[in-house]
Length: 223
Image (cartoon, rainbow, N blue to C red; front, side):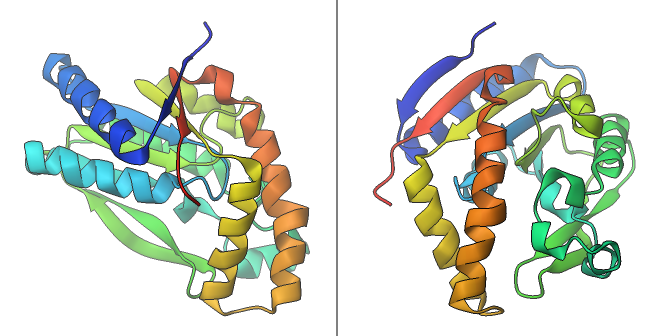
């Protein structure tokens, strides 16, 4: 089934999502998972965080953020494998661990903590967040939620509603260069090479998975 495509501002997308998720949650008799997918630099993390805030404002304690980025392979492991230059590509994640984690979260009745990713140290941080037992909506965000290759293929069936965020490629390139520069860990030349060699190919790969979403939001942003 072809997903609905809507051109919306981020604010309009959030309003639409909140209303839809609140309705879904009121009808569900179990914990539900909402997936926000899209390539690097499209604004997934920002939108997901704002969505959780708005859901919890409407119903305190009902929603929690579950970021895929916490399942990056640790930097030391990437160095040992000799694949640091491809960091961020699908094969540089612990994809199977993420699928198992999400599967457990859907049914867990106890507090569950999960890892996050710090751009300040470019590595995984343990126990970065905790999903409380009373949480009924998991807002899952990440690049590869809708891929069909390898362990990633196991995610789509765990999502009760999947959203794909689409932002023009040139806009994404500018955002990614700015993001890497702000982290201040590498040279401008290294950042440019990484964006062209890894980030943008990942963007192109993920774009091909948009048809597996329930809805595609073409986000209208100034930059």
